[in-house]
Length: 296
Length: 266
Ligand SMILES: Nc1ncnc2c1ncn2[C@@H]1O[C@H](COP(=O)(O)OP(=O)(O)O)[C@@H](O)[C@H]1O
Ligand SMILES: [Mg+2]
Image (tube, protein in one colour):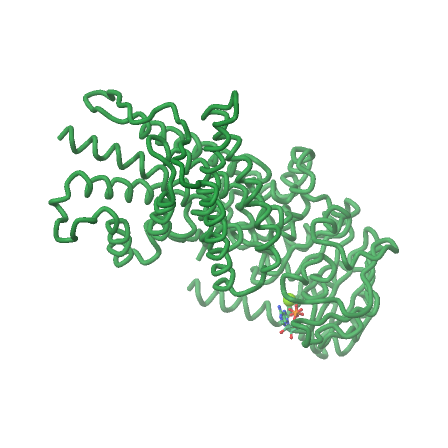
């Protein structure tokens, strides 16, 4: 039983990372209906930045991560402004393809900076464990859960109370009506990309704790894809819940491979996609897909 | 003075929908803009508020002037800041936001003055004060129209453009909306009132325009339009009847709507 709960906790840690990446995707989608596949690219860019920043004197993990988050956010904002904005009004599909191109581009360049040496984010946890009640858990998983929880709280307050957050919600609901009130839709697009970039960088930083950053690292971000679809493209709570669900499902298949032995030896890689398909059969719009408030 | 001179607007580079429209609204004046569906009324309001872009529309000739300055090229936010705000057709409130959040978006260009403006709007629309924290999507049609108007007033416009505010409202609510437009106007706001309900619009306007297929075909003081035979026949549905009933009378469309509503209720 203890073992089961430990696996679940490990899943929550991993799922927090998925949730942060997916949140960025959903924020862009809600603001502009752009389906952005560039999240893995931003995650890698952010993480590579962290590995370089921590090598500078006087800069540790806790300074490098916020700094890389900010820089990746600005980078994403620049990409939106330079590449995506001119595409406004083009077919959604064409824009999605452009984001795939951007992702490949950013990843390839970032990988070049990884080189052949093993790079680390020099997180304070490594693989150290701690006790959480009766459970023995890895500190890095607890850190990821806490970081995601803190960011979700900040996002909640941002969308609820700030002028920009409210403008973003308005644009998500009715772009033209928001324009008519004097909201700058361009600023909202830019902000959504900056947030997505920043979230991807944080996600990457916590995903990289206790391991090295290598060219296969981006596969973590790939798992965010079924997470997004499972949660419902346009639901922020959906991204969080689906991230955790997929993370836990994956951890369970790793801990109990005999449960799913019929899927072969690499079950934990396909389980996210399997969960997604199973849920979509029952709920075509994902767990939390659009459910509009409308007076009949 | 808000003016449009010889305005031509084209959608998708090919569809000419405004063919040389000229109108003007003086500060503090109520001007009615009438015309059948598809005449180009909403397009004119889009041109006045910078919203043509969204519809792939373009001004190809003529100008939009505010106090003599050309403003046709400005973005919506700039026009709101300069005092032109539109209440779009169909209300377009943010259904998932609360009433208060809708008002906050209305004050987006000037958040510092949110409190005093909200006080003013909520005094004008007490219904909204009662439902401040409610989700806007759950308001009734009439309440949603008030919210749309209140939201626009949060920008403190000098010119308020209303696109068919009486659409789909029961007669009693139409009267209420009419009275509110008068109240808003009394605080010095110029109003350009687009309506299919010509009786209501002309009863409070000082001047009126009638549009047909992208052109202004009548341009007269409201009183004269009310007694114009063509207007009475086509827009008031009152051919040959006495106008003495004034605002108490309902347009044909409204009567139909009211009947439909009653049948549905019974
Ligand atoms: N976004 C658009 N793209 C193309 N044509 C449009 C668009 N919006 C309106 N039109 C056309 O322009 C004409 C005027 O429409 P509109 O301004 O909405 O008229 P009204 O508000 O008087 O009913 C109509 O023929 C309509 O079909
Ligand atoms: Mg219209």
